[in-house]
Amino acid sequence: MKIAIVVPGGLHPSGQEQVVPSWLTLFERLATSHTLHAFALRHLEKPQSYSLRGFTVHDLGRPSAPFGFSRWAQERALTSALAERGPFDLIHGFHADPAGLLAARAGRRLRIPSVVTCDSGEFVSIPAIKYGSQRTRRGRAAVQEACELAGKVHVCTTFMGALAASHNVATTVIPLTSVTSRAATIKWQMRRDSDTFRIIQVASLSRVKNQRLLIDALPIVREKIDARLDLVGEDTLNGELQAHAAAIGIGAYVTFHGFLPQNRVLDVLSRADLYVQSSLHEAAGVAVLEAAAAGVPALGTRAGYVADWNPTKAMALGDAIPESLADAILTLHADADRRRSMAALARTFSIARDATWCAAQFDELYRSLRS
Image: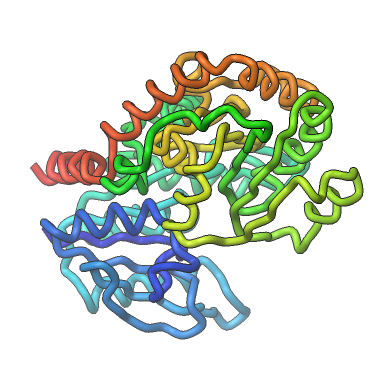
């Protein structure tokens, strides 16, 4: 099958930086049995094509209309690129707006099946941080059109599926993961008892990921135990969180690692005692899967995999406030048996649904649309 993938970016030629690891992992595996062309809508400055892990990427550059950048200009560039590289048997867009919408429109125009993955803020509205497609009329219309045109709408968690259902959108649930056989070889055991309890989060520093909640909980935790925090991810807040940590007196106990390549992320995970998700919204949370594969138990806000797994494979917070988070961290610190149990069950889930399994599920989904 010849498949067109449409993404907003995340497929940098380096294969290391500015990438979405779960997309790379999935596309690499799909490319072993299909001809795969990925079209990046607006990433690199200039249009270019290149090979990446067995599939071909066509970065469309940053197309502009007479009055500046627009979705119309993106659609025109994508239409031209699809015509040049086609014909295709199926098209799949990642995130409803704009990639999913443009993929679904192209599917209708080309009379081929389309899949739209909703793995972001498609079904939420958080005005305080200007996040979520449901916050604006244009965003709502884009998500609705993408989902109505798609042959299948895909989500990664039952949590996200429930949000979609509340908007009358039926979905297929398949986890997207970067977990591979290497994760299964990481030494799986709880860390030996020590005076330091290591907490980790892997996510870009941003408003929606809400690391400030975790930073504010840390001083409360440290009144009882010696806890340290590792934050791994690109800083999109220009040092705001580092300054805040220093201002409340815990700068010495928080390590801001910045962006790390995947192998180094796994190294940091292997030294952690607890993974904490602090997000205001999380459609899924690939890092929670990575932590699970490494045997690290997860605690967090009631969203994504944490919501799906609560209470047996993860622990979800009732209230996303520093005091509640600190209390939950201390509760799990004092209950090693519960941490081990959660970690074991979550690891079984994550390893059983690794990248190879994930690719097989998408292969089956694609073939069902072509039959």
